[in-house]
Amino acid sequence: MENAIGVFDSGVGGLTVVRALMERLPFENIIYFGDTARVPYGIKSTETIAHYAREITEFLLHRQVKILIVACNTMAAVAHQVISDLSPVPVLDVISAGAEDAVAQTRVKYVGVIGTPATINSNAYARAIHQHDSEIRVFSQACPLFVPLVEEGWLDHEVTRLTAVEYLKTVLCHGIDTLVLGCTHYPLLKPLLQSVVGGNIFLVDSAGAMAEAAASMLHRMRLKRNDERPPEYTYYVTDVPLRFQSIGERFLGRTLSNVRVVKW
Image 1: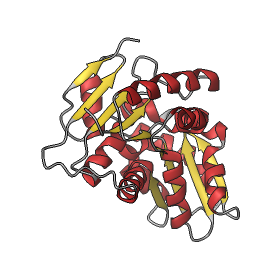
Image 2: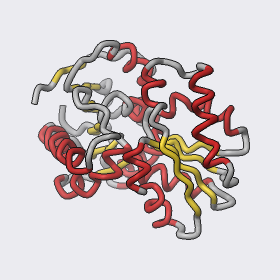
Image 3: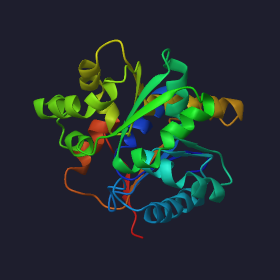
Image 4: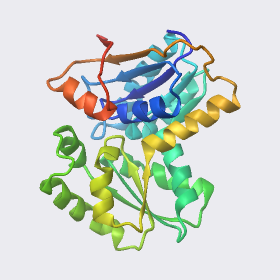
């Protein structure tokens, strides 16, 4: 499948980005790669993540994608340069898209960021936000328990709510008006997180921000698909773990078909 949008992630979380792309760009072909055998990336070393990113980038470029979307915040945080150096096609990532949206939304210039330990420790969101506005103060919090809770399907469970209250204390005490959901699993927690932080804080959904950035780039570079045939969606994974189908369909919001397993 030529001229598709290539999207990759460490596991199934990036399917929230695919879902947003399907809604925003309903005629585009999409190839998704989820490294389900080696997930989670959030606790691995920078060198290991960069090595994985290089392998997946080469795999997708071999399938002649027209743009690459790094849907994994952890990969975008520590391996963006590696991916960009390899790619002859434009590369977009969720951190840049989320940072731009946060800058556009904040009024008081106090922004919170939540994500995996690797994303938060990289300080990538703060750097990306400060490239747009150095006066914005960024308060970050790693939330390692959110990913397993989402994959368990506990999207409105009391345990998840209590966990969110505990994690968010450290950023809410600074008077933020914008909170970046810095992991592609987190959009599924958006209703719960909104109820915890209250209606006065804007939640930046990295998946939605990414879809808008992709639409803008395709339009600007005249890369939009004009074919009237239905789009094709192909999903590559490195393993089909237990409950993969149910978790994947929850993230995607539709039936997950045409899944192919890649053995390195």
